[in-house]
Image (cartoon, rainbow, N blue to C red; front, side):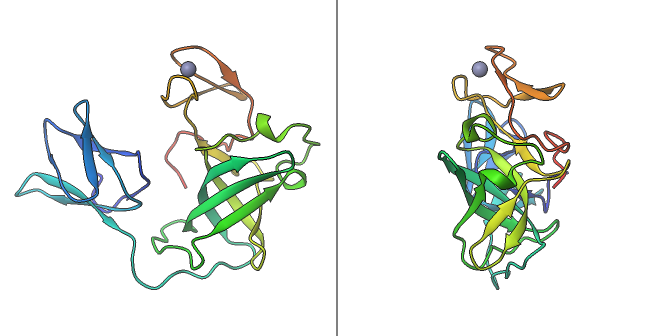
Length: 187
Ligand SMILES: [Zn+2]
């Protein structure tokens, strides 16, 4: 069950046939979607699903930590990442809540020519913290990189197909720096 699960805005938390949309949840085409970053709370009696926004003591990021975030912008040599979470099972918001950066030299072991082939805005990525002060991240490593991505044209989740991602609708392929945990829900 989804109770207690950590979700990001846009994540599916239930279906409208079974539950009502509570706080932090909206309905779209019969689906119940999280509108905030937080933890799923299911009220079985009232048949209502809510998402409790993250609160409490902000987590402090240290070098070597694994973080999850959303790509907000991709430029020639960097990707900007809005951090949402630190480490597995950590549900506190990060202390600065601010912008982290992946430099083109820290994307993968191999040489990267075009940052736009690796990341796109709205991609959810998993990365390791290289520098806690400047919030430099690295996605070098098999389990690091994009863990969730949508087709920019069709707005539906891309599926993994070999070492690329593919849109199930328009069949467009995307190379990207993909985590081997892509699409598994593992963080
Ligand atoms: Zn598509």
